[in-house]
Image 1 (cartoon, rainbow, N blue to C red):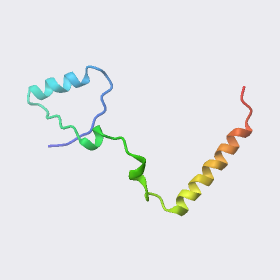
Image 2 (tube, rainbow, N blue to C red; image 1 turned 180 degrees about the vertical axis):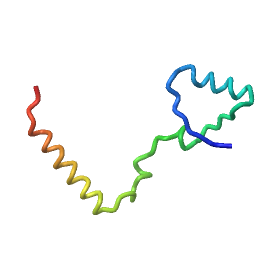
Image 3 (cartoon, rainbow, N blue to C red; image 1 turned 90 degrees about the vertical axis):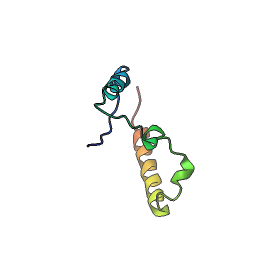
Image 4 (cartoon, rainbow, N blue to C red; image 1 turned 135 degrees about the horizontal axis):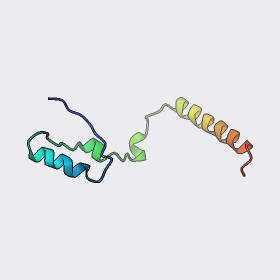
Length: 73
């Protein structure tokens, strides 16, 4: 038995999956990690080292400054 993750692209997709499940062809298992994918910023604390975070912020500032040099129409 294989386990796959799919992305539903059409409004009727969930209905079709339900029909396949009713025919005992597949079993739909909703993963709480996928369903509840919103991460609180406080959960990311410590994810990057202070050095990496500082380097990232510096790079973002440089990139923003480069974009601001280009005139907009």
